[in-house]
Length: 333
Image 1 (cartoon, helix red, strand yellow):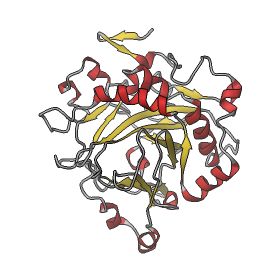
Image 2 (image 1 turned 120 degrees about the vertical axis):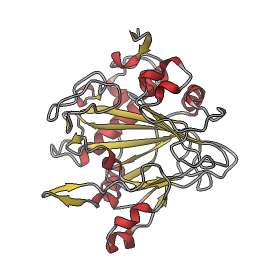
Image 3 (image 1 turned 135 degrees about the horizontal axis):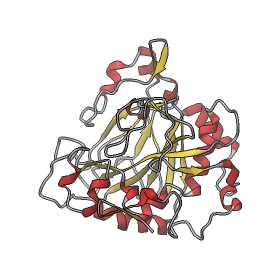
Image 4 (image 1 turned 60 degrees about the vertical axis):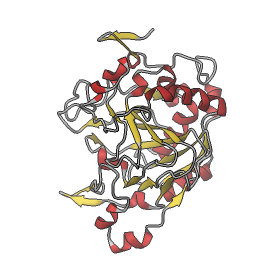
């Protein structure tokens, strides 16, 4: 059962699935094996920095998650303010204190709305169990292993944090081009992966996620170390702001491709792969669930809390706490 924390049920105390989102528990080795990617899929990821159209949820699972999704959305609120990580207490549901961050609109333009939040896995049983689903964690393990120094086909995977991105019909906003690890340098080494799950069919009209093939090789040198590109627009205002810091060669290679994800399908991308999405001007919402992971043993690179409201982990210490559970281990197969 969930543990009560400050009079709220905090599901982070439970480091395994608790419901029936993906069938009978516990998951057996054959269930994991059925989720393995092909060598061609792994090869595409290594060459391009992303992989699309991996079926991870059934339509029924998507519909259940969307029903849960609705209680987190405040599009009907009269208050269009964007709430940051220190303003979550202003929301109107009791579990709000467990969120790491909430923006009713990440943009400062009320006509371009992107609802964005982190930490809902601690609140919702469905979103809690989603982080453990083998159709996501097994491919994540394979793709992390493809760039990991161990040279093993699979590596143990820990959960980093979740995100919800929702773009309402007609006025859904853009998400400017960026590399995820630019926001995550507080964790080292760079051995992360992002999984973007489409809960609605994504089209160019409704703002599907786009990727720049090969951009996972783009970095800069600082104090003799490779670092990601700097953050150029934290509020999504300027879609092309990243181009101001690209080299001529990178500009020539900057040729984004739409993922056009189908409902229940996911894209997996490298932490340096440049990606973004254009506004939703269609007549229906574009909603997605994002899961971020890293290889077991990833360490803190700061003496500040890694996420809002959780205990700090000292610089150099591995991220071993209930907030970063082990979601897949090759020993389970």
